[in-house]
View 1: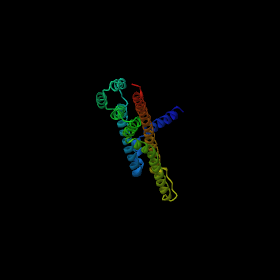
View 2 (view 1 turned 45 degrees about the vertical axis):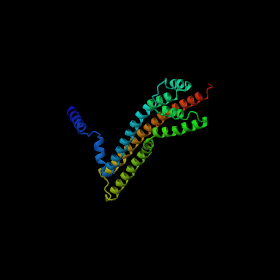
View 3 (view 1 turned 60 degrees about the vertical axis):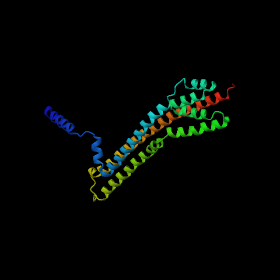
View 4 (view 1 turned 135 degrees about the vertical axis):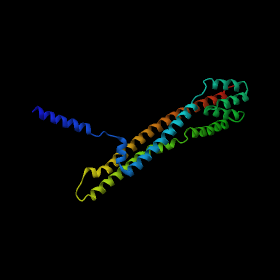
Length: 229
């Protein structure tokens, strides 16, 4: 009896040591050429999304950095009639907010509506610069899962084709290529889509904060021009 138990234990141990580990690379290879092409495309899209995200993230972060004393200095220059110094300060600061204020300062002496319009037009250009290529990340977030589902459909077509040509002898190994293609492409598409979706929304939130900052400083500048002398 003990000998029998020992033999069974040895067989179980041998099977366990021979069991294959799950390898993502091997799964991709087993998925066939169609699955490999789709996953390669998804990896390219992931690279593009991450590149745009980090490029925009640092650009928006830099745009949001405004000196706390900036508006105080602008106030002192404007109230003292030192318009050239105010323009020089805006030029040297070189942020979206300073460019808006600089546009308004360049219109001082004209009606307040004209100054407000000039600031609004400059603000639209600054927002466009902040949102540069962000829409590409949103497109990737929507397209990646669809590309993954395309791989699922292709994988199922391959599996059905193998069943149709099996002559009634269905073997799971025969269906493995199609199933691997279906599953791996779906997972890859969802991963890329989720990452791109999170990246897009984070950029939108960061951009909205900068836009709010520009609007607040613009209103503060217009209120400064409305102050009685």
